Amino acid sequence: MPQTQFFSHSTAALFYGIPLPRAVERAQTIHVSARPAGGLPRAQGVRGHHEAWDREPVRRGELFLSSPVDTWCELWRELSIEELVAAGDYLVTGDEPYSGNPPLATLDELKNAVYSYGSRRGVRKLREALALVRYGSMSPMETTTRLFLVAHGLPEPELNHPVFDDDGALLALIDLAYPEYKVAIEYQSGLHMASPQHRNDIARRERLEDRGWTVIYISIDDIRHRPHETLARVRARLRARGALV
Image 1 (tube, rainbow, N blue to C red):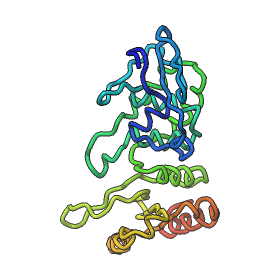
Image 2: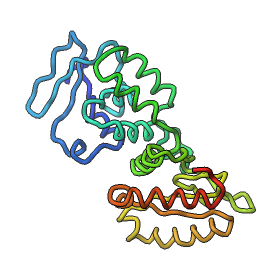
Image 3: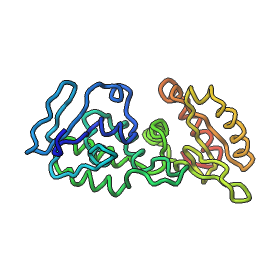
Image 4: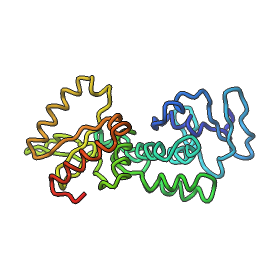
């Protein structure tokens, strides 16, 4: 691949670990961008793009890729608004709340990238998604749960809220929390429910309840198949703690 070309779009996203929907993640197409003077990449299984403008690729090992924030902007064609928000949450959060390692980008860097996008196609979609990106979400389903709650009129929860014991040691990072009312929401995947971690969650729930928290577990089935019941559960817990919802 000549120096005027570099991996981009969902191909670059895979290198960065950006969460993608399964269909996009498993697609066989390799995306390569080129500067306008560099010639459009042409090869079997390769989709070429002349969208590099004045952007500079970054080096990752022996590969040249779109930068993390430029990659996010490129994904507007392949991802829905919700999927773009989940990808943006990952970029600005990573696993920093647990590990302390800095994420791939900051929210300001993401905002600057969208601003630099100008009036090109897709910018309205990017702006809509950007307005919903938050620091703190560490999984696409945490993002989905947050967006679900807010879209139905509930207050926006804090993300991965830390709770400490009496000695100052970290007791838990709550996926989505209303600290004022001590209402905790934990997302549970089917795999998670069947894992040893589920047993640890039971003990953690008891420790949180000992400190005055009430804990709600939500799964993807609760959101997709029982949305009204799920919203009623959350509202009931909040109202019981004095929230006007």
